Length: 374
Image (tube, rainbow, N blue to C red; front, side, top):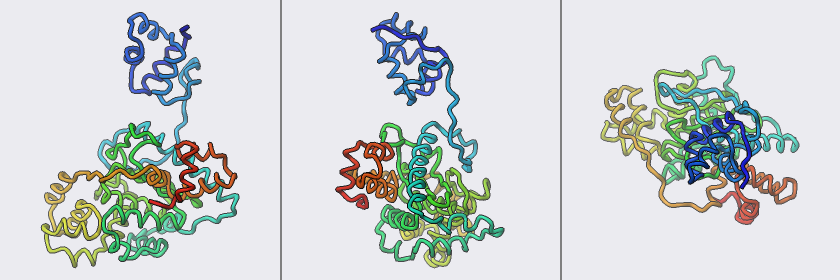
């Protein structure tokens, strides 16, 4: 097959985006040495160029440019507290772009429907004191969360679903996934970020990294919801810390007070031997309980550090069906809305499928299966 000549600068750029060099890419797609040399000179067949574009996750047409394009990435404040945090990866930005596309669609949909702005978004933005207990009380009132919600949840996963449903009922989009879009081969590292929030007045959203343990996901969810009440957009790792970004410290206090009220905690806590029991009671991680104990001078730093060092991710058991996971990773509220819009003919089926990262027939299956299931 005849080869086409491409810019070496563009090919090197594409190979780098694919996590390779042009030389290593050539070795992967060409068996003969002379074919590898040809690729190194910038001569690729159409199938080879298509493979490179797919590996780099760029439009095929970009390879025909004379120089690498300057791609604008969405801007979001980086509030992570981990020391020497690594730069946010392409996986993060592709995930961010994906949820922003969904949010943009919903904003247009709600605007056309005459929807009003949500009053709780940024409610504490101009509060000089920003008292964590005041924010917790307001969040509980707006979301309708009670202690019975925790008591009736047999585990952290159920508790997360309950809190998520209440947030979405008030208009907050909740996304939870462990990989980029629908590509299970591209896991999102929880070491890079735990979640992020975008405090839009009409369609606020929170994203929770599904790679984390369920007990950690509950804390991340409430932490990101605190961002919405503060009106502060940002990406975070929600690492408990007395240092670092003051916004993150405040959101951590809100999450801790929301999930583990101090009076109830002190009533249950009798010593370090109660760590497991108290964590299970509140449906949170042992690390959250250890931090609560440390902040109240019930344990020393060495105890907390030991709990932190031994904290491991617990993988969820079982493999739920796609019709269950699709609404979770795309926000149940967004999924219900766009599926209904597609079924009514208001939105093209292929556009709905593209936004949900599924095939058109899956959109129909979601409509038949009721997207509020799971």
